[in-house]
Image (cartoon, rainbow, N blue to C red; front, side, top):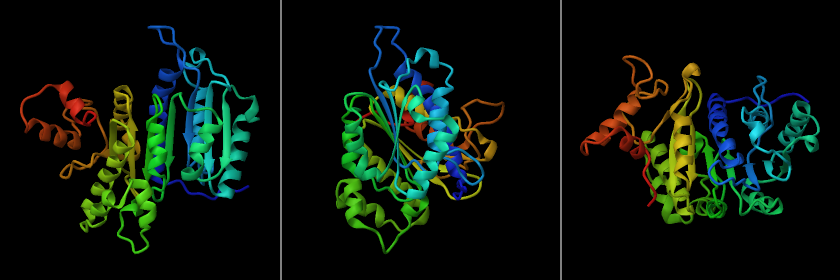
Length: 331
């Protein structure tokens, strides 16, 4: 079976973000607590737009990356992996991509039934099939990380986000491409109503005509939907590759530790490929590649400078407070 799908530059950078975040997420959720000896009975990762498993240039897709990073994790000996305890769920709508994903997983990892975790690959739609599949697998009542990684438009109903937000220790990552922000005659109001929870929540964003402001307003509007779903902490970013189209990402969690881990993963994007994450609140700063505050002598990321400047204009503060201010506390 030939490889037919091209990997977007922004998608490659996003995959590296997933790697960094999951490297922190897995041991937090799977290791036995040193404080009280508690071990979580089940953890589920849902990749609802799984893709083909491998792309035209040989780059692995997100399911391969997710499974490989887990099985090769430095802390695997302490994670107590078992098919009953760890579920990886991959949903892909397109038949050709689904079949390619199945073949790729078997080629890379062998029979899925022999793995130390349960891998469930289904052909279906993210919006329709995510909740029933999570119910089938007994995921509710235990931590879930839902990855809704559509390159096109966001079409996951708010009810799906709301159900995951109401589940203990659960998080979501949603990404979507630039076409979402174009003013289109074929805009589907009914679909947007299900995604945002009603017409009043998204029509102001659609009425914005300034092209450079449009993505900011839509992204902030979607972040508001994630907040209304019940995620007390949210992050919103534009991923900007050196070449190609940008990608947009919204993260929702109820745990400040998850928020901190995702911020660290975002701000430490490796700039070897020229990609960076832009906070929608910055307008004047160039995005030359993310750096830590004082990562190198005489270098400081201009976007961070703009954010810090905005905060200092409200009065004196300390570094810890600035770090918290980068994303507001729950309301």
